[in-house]
Length: 128
Image (cartoon, rainbow, N blue to C red; front, side):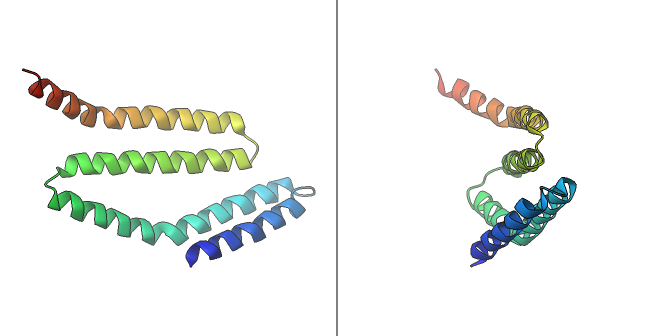
């Protein structure tokens, strides 16, 4: 199971960071960023499998690719925002993490406008 490997790697790097942080805090941050990159690369191929599945399901359900792509972009923004904010928090920069989260929320809202418009249009057409 890949998750066991990822968790094991996370534990090992966490212990290294705890040891290194006292004497070389800048190296601890770099080690944390390296681990985050490795984990992201390990799961990247799994993400493509999920995306292919979503595309197949959308095609079978006759859902416009525009809406599927928008939904996938929103999900991507949410995950990347969380990832970036956590990296900033690990580096001790909670204020920057909060601003990254705010920017992610605004971008999600902007990306959701076409879907919200479609839902409102559908509701208006249903009302006599």
